[in-house]
Image 1 (cartoon, rainbow, N blue to C red):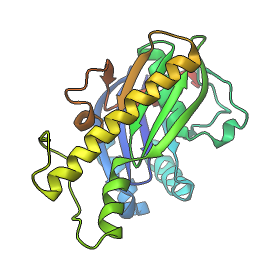
Image 2 (tube, rainbow, N blue to C red):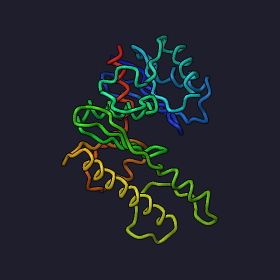
Image 3 (cartoon, one colour):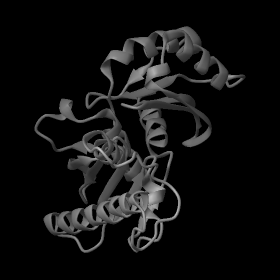
Image 4 (cartoon, rainbow, N blue to C red):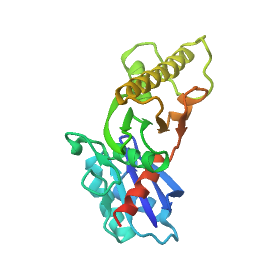
Length: 250
């Protein structure tokens, strides 16, 4: 099946054309730029000559949902599926209040289940760094949330008089010889520490020696580079997960 997949996040929205779980083309739009007209034009441009079976959305920004639904109805001419715990996911949910789970987190768990198998941990490096856990019997059992890298660097800059805003990219030296490098080291070493401790903790809780590790999100490749942990990096994990859910519900 071929569908339009949309991941509405706190900072920006990613969308793509999924053809049999492969993302063949994609685009991104900032939240601040997401007017109805801009959204509709972007969908039209991305769709091009593709013949689509429909569209599916994972959103963590409820006040954008109606805007995207109207634009998709106008351009795709099908009712759009919005991801929630109430639709078919292909995984069980063992969680007391499933309506409180972010749609993107459910989608990432579905993608990990299909691509890597269970048990699994998905680390999503977005505005927040989230960990979502699948048990050995293919159940979503919960997660862990920590502040993301951009929140850390933004906060350091906003709440101090002298610390600059640092762009987190490029090489990271072993010891900081400048304020910028010192912040970069704190970011990479600190977040690698979060990864190690979280995985160690979850292995103990789940009672397993090995677990599949998946990573996605804008800062994942920068943090994971050179790390001696077997994370599989998939930048399109959420969009791919949406394609599996679309297929289940059609």
